[in-house]
Image 1 (cartoon, helix red, strand yellow):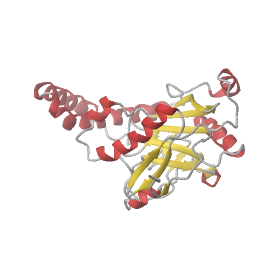
Image 2 (cartoon, helix red, strand yellow):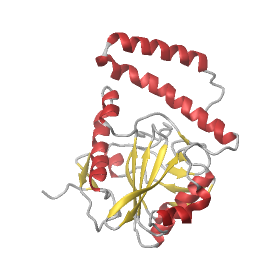
Image 3 (cartoon, one colour):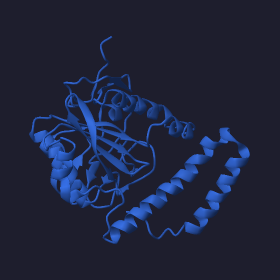
Image 4 (cartoon, one colour):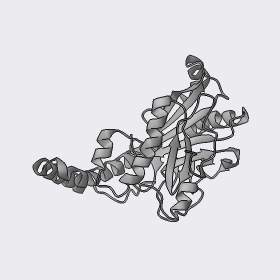
Length: 283
């Protein structure tokens, strides 16, 4: 939940104006140092807008027609029980649901994320209120139909990569409502649809669902904007997994080798069910 006591609008406008002027006068090479300050303010504004919309009982912009799931599935030749794959983009406040058709995955829906806590960057330790970034898998043991936030599934933090870097924390979820302390809050209506697609896929035989969580859309422009961020090396690893999926439209095989994510292409017979474990690919 956004702290509504922080009335920063007038100050924010002044700061943004000053930073924009400085950016224009100092040239491209200072932009990576300046941009994060601007982006942090824009993220705060987006969170406040989402909270205000949710609190007013209104639907977030970009929400699919949640009352018409069967027709939407039929329109894309999909059905409940088809294997799924999930991607999360923090900065854009979006969760993508991909579904397998034939030997490829196709985008079925993009849902607005109502709230996530912290800023861009991975979760490092218990209590830092950061929402995780990385590659995770969700199986039936991660499901909680009786969550305090309507329904939830556990992302599985810390995974093998997180443990290799001594990252701590637990119970990092994707859930309903619009409040978050290290989780991704989707609203009750959206989590109901995500839950239906997820549980149907698991019930139909998909052992695990791969979830890729990114700080932002992994474009050259965004990577350049964040070139000075201390997390850039980690984000470059995430981009390898992002690009592997976008190239093949099959979830890649992910392992953790010498403290780094190791990405290998997926195959048409795969659906992202492989666990993410420590181990180096055979050479």
